[in-house]
Length: 270
Image 1 (cartoon, rainbow, N blue to C red):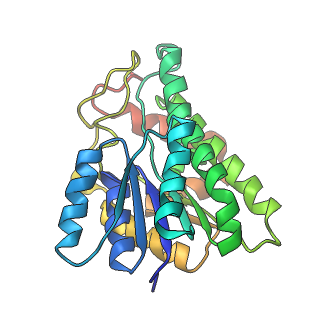
Image 2 (cartoon, rainbow, N blue to C red):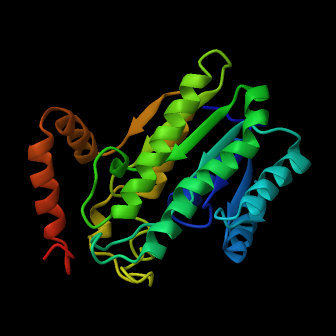
């Protein structure tokens, strides 16, 4: 793989999968524009990469803000004059039953996960058409199957699948590449920062993070999928089996998913 001189915008780039994507594309020669709310973390990453001769452009951005998303795209254009790849990775999760969750939590997740993807994609779109580039959404297995206790998270991922599917179909003859990447459970801080029913951060992961796929491996798989211009990427054996079985035996999968999530420590299903 060679992304030399390709301008790559990554949102949610200060931690987890986003941070791993930043390092991966920089290592592969990309001109990375890294967006995140935590500007201090981005500056630390910039300093670390500089030691290896890599340079990135850090941009502070809250993707719930349309204006800030536009500023991110403008910053990339001001610096490099083009956009080749946009990776919509910024996202948050939640853990609460629908009967308990406050509406503000659902809105926050939709604003971050879905509208953040829409805003960035909309402003980058004309330039991706010119470069015949790649529009990427980092989604989840939750975009295929509703996960109990993750009402807003699942809804946002289904919405991302829908809009990216439409964009791909509308651009069958323009040369635009659209990738929907769906990691399974990945070791990151997304569960630690997941919202509880009242909007507070969960603080602890209900799962054994050590048994999950590493963000670095996820980033590598996504980079390969972008290079090969794949339509979809579904990761982990568990995730692939779930998606396949849900097509054939949805009622059985409902029970299976329920039982799995009911076994989590302090599961809201119990």
